[in-house]
Length: 325
Image 1: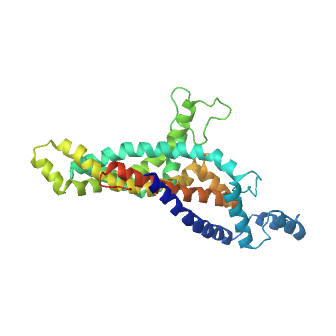
Image 2: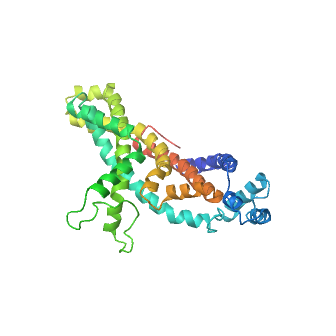
Image 3: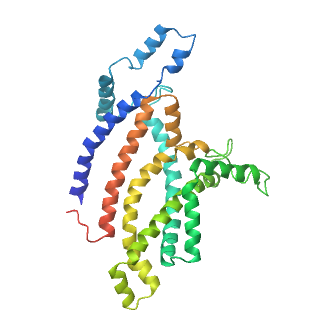
């Protein structure tokens, strides 16, 4: 197992290198730039703009800029400094990652806890009223844009409904803690309710539908029919024999989706003013803050590689036929 992990890690190095080259030049090819606002300012002349460009190193050829950026990462572990705030990018990302991990991790965990049982029961009771209800709700969840759902939850639980005790809104419209209040776990959970609910509704729809299809395929295999022929209870056949193999395709889906969810929280973090990586990326994109943009994208690319390695290891734990030695 350690040899396999080392081999996969070494294989990921050239992949990340190629990705870094593509991402660097794609980001720089975007229209506009960090000096666009200064160029439009009538109080700043051309010489001042060029001086600022030289200070930021933007006057150098793109290959030279890329080499300096890559060398800083490999040699010093430095992702550079923000063009807008002049703060180290690693420090800015380090402040935001825990917040996004909390939001996405909690929503993702609740999604699996809800979606797997729903998908299993729906597959076991195919064409029942429960199956039709789940199908209807999941289709609705897959069709509703996540940003629209977030805005509707704010409208309902912040504008229309009020707390019967305090008279204030039932749930806050954004932020991580109440302004000027104590940073308690209860206050954090109160602010997490709407963004986590927004993410969960969409993800549960996808995962329950996917797991239902996976379980239906497994329930029609020969070994499941053999288990039924032995006289085993249908519940044992479903939740002991079929469930384990039904989870296998879900592992691949999770490995591919979790990094996408990590980055895709951009809409939810922006709508609910959640201080996470998605909002940081949006702020950097608006300001053409190249170092921050590249740092966030590179972290997400590394997360994809790590999640795929973890998925392979989980395969070995779930399926005894898989060996990595």
